[in-house]
Structures are given as structure tokens and as C-alpha cells.
Image (cartoon, rainbow, N blue to C red; front, side, top):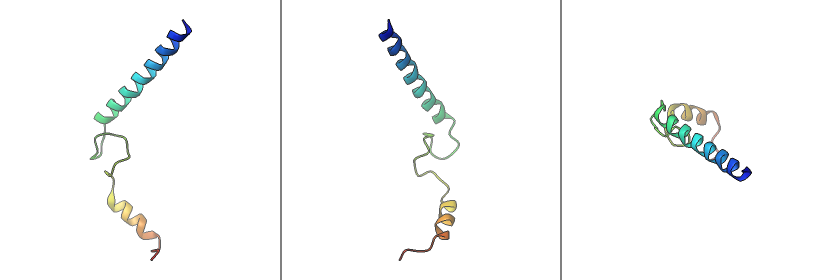
Length: 58
């Protein structure tokens, strides 16, 4: 009985995780539709301004 409960808990957690990923992919507001936040779909102007603040290492 304990083993079945653990398997059920693991299954529910995995289903929640996959469901959340699917939900976030449909709710993405940027150019990247995955919603993970790791791809290159970001504000390049903001990155360029941030890089200009640091002195060049050349």
C-alpha cells in the first residue's frame, strides 16, 4: 500500500509538472513560445546597454 501511494504521488507530481509546462507555453508573452526563459528571445537593447556599462577587457 505504501509503494502504491508513493507511485501515485510521483505520478501526480509529474502530471502537474508537465501540465504547468504546457500551460506556460500557451501563456508566453514574448517571442519564444516555450515559456522556459532560457532561449534567446530577450530584449537585446537592454542587454546592449548593460554591456556598455562595463569597460572593455581588450
